[in-house]
Length: 149
Image 1 (tube, rainbow, N blue to C red):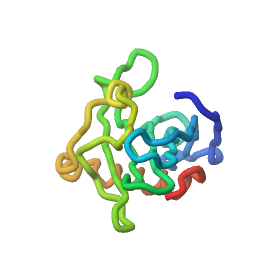
Image 2 (tube, helix red, strand yellow; image 1 turned 120 degrees about the vertical axis):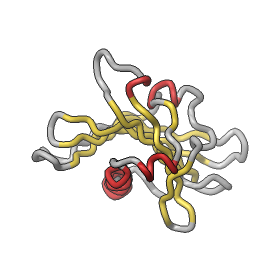
Image 3 (tube, one colour; image 1 turned 90 degrees about the vertical axis):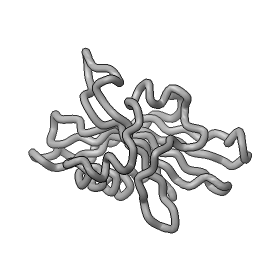
Image 4 (cartoon, rainbow, N blue to C red; image 1 turned 180 degrees about the horizontal axis):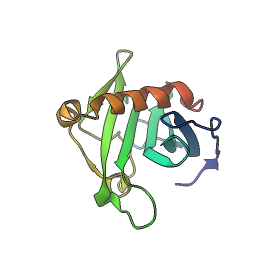
């Protein structure tokens, strides 16, 4: 993903603490509505050495598309592929983040190739790690200062 690279690590994490690592961001014009659209991605780590997930956020300054975040949950690193993870999608509607079954409008066509095949919102809610997913989403929204929803 091209754009401005910004790496921020929010301090040294103790075991079990979450740490945010910001990566690239970019601004484009939405093909379908002409709105100025933004994308930002990064990582959430647990402790100093465990990657919890990658994330990709999309939002527009105006237009019909709600803010959207896709989490890539699973194994990352050398020797892994998208087959080792799933993507979990959320949208902000009426002031609340909700799990959804679709990628963001205008998301890169290869998003699932990198982040993993989508897991349905219903399946995430039933999964024992569903609370962890919500905790991670809230952590990203609170701590990535590039996100302006």
